[in-house]
Length: 135
Image (tube, rainbow, N blue to C red):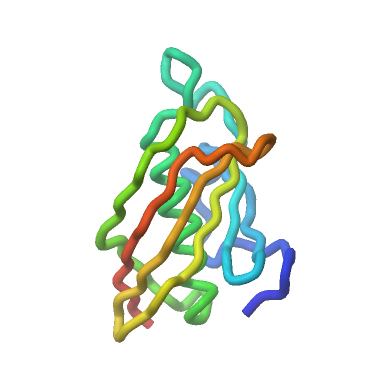
């Protein structure tokens, strides 16, 4: 496991999509992987709020990183099986997502994730996701 507060490179291959969304590298806090979304015009709806699909992607990315870190890094291949997102508030500014592995059984990992507004800590979304893990 990484050490507390350690900045970590992505475990997955470089991704132009992650770069396009302005997702910053992962840090490890306690049992959770964290990731920052820097909000910019390309990820917002006409009303200035971040598109829910972008927030879903942020949750998916940080959840996958948590699983990879938990089971061994780059050689692990993942597929998202399911994700239930509960939207709590609109997002207009930078956000932090965190995810922790709840349980891994055989090849299925369950992950708990949340997104908060970076400046205020205001809850934006929470999620429960599952991944198929291939080693």
